[in-house]
Image (cartoon, one colour):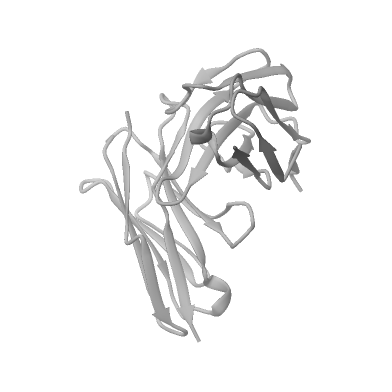
Length: 112
Length: 112
């Protein structure tokens, strides 16, 4: 079974803090993704990566950056957290394009 | 870019009845259409998918139909059961775009 894990289930941060969300997958998948999930808005893609050190902007990259130094690990960084970044963050991985995405359990981030 | 619309946003059906969720997409180049189910507090999981060279696909009580001309696809659940209660997301993908675009989700409630 593919396992995708995220560093925290719940996180509370203050406005202006730098926040790191980490995702690890154990199936040697090429592609990894970060989404945020908000009620009524579905899953919106923030960034994705199709190889180590490669990254591509998704639909809502503003205020976020990512890092992929190792194939199994994809980090989402909020340089200066703001209250409108309070959300559920989901990481996913995928072996090849056009195949199943496997999701992590999610991190519920609250920015006060 | 691709835009996926999903309807209805909420759906309640009596146990044993059928449920239908519909999605439309904008980019005629899209060629892969997965459906994900997210139970309360859980991660999204793939339940069925269809590729553009197929008009219909079934897996036990779940079926997906695709109309490429009209650019819409639908999820059909027959003989609904309480465990079908969840949020369902449709998505569209084409290889040139490298990313999945999700609909906004449908909250399905099965009434015992």
